[in-house]
Image (cartoon, rainbow over all chains, first blue to last red; front, side, top):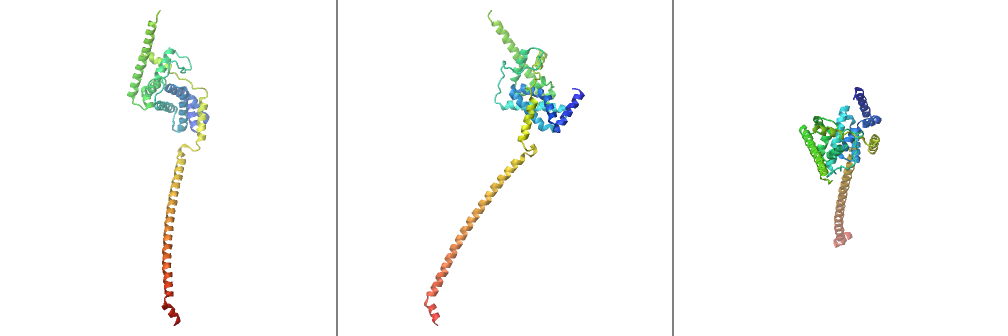
Length: 191
Length: 112
């Protein structure tokens, strides 16, 4: 972001704080992608994600006076989205596992790499416990370092690191296991 | 392998757009909440406080009314008792007067 962009964001924030609805709508449009993506990957349901993302922005509207800068705004949005998503997942007695065949939305632009593996990764991430899932998403979706994740989730940094380590191991094991199962299935196929 | 996995994770977790019109839906929800809530957040305790005050007033009023009713009943009892006692006294006095007027001494006294 250039200085000019940063200033325009500060300006939009100031105008939104003053009650300018168009400025607030501009802020929503600017951050909706990040908030919705985090909500979607946490909840694995488009409708629930949309509802949660809307709730985050409604809360932002009420708390605009306390938001000091664009950096603070991004931090606040990530923190509130993660917290609300974790709360909702914990309130649900047992969240549904996302089947691998479910048509989870792929990213807007075609991604480099293996699309099947990426879909499998999304499904496996949806099966992680809520806190571990939030850590993985903040690390690889929002590109935060462990210190920032610890601050966002109000979690000790060692917990963040252990969540990351364990989740990556788990993902690797499951992907390797799935690949081995596919390979052995292929070998066992009669000619 | 680790780097590959991390690269694939980043690719898998790219941002996605919400359905078109998201900002308008947020604005609509904010508007509906604003109209639904006619009081700002900091004054939202007032209706609850008013309702509690009304309830307290009703309870206090009912208590006061009940006490007054009890006092009224008590006063009525006392009045009836007083009337009964007065009646008895008047009866005794009337009988006394009658006894005096019937006695011969009172008749003679008139002749002298």
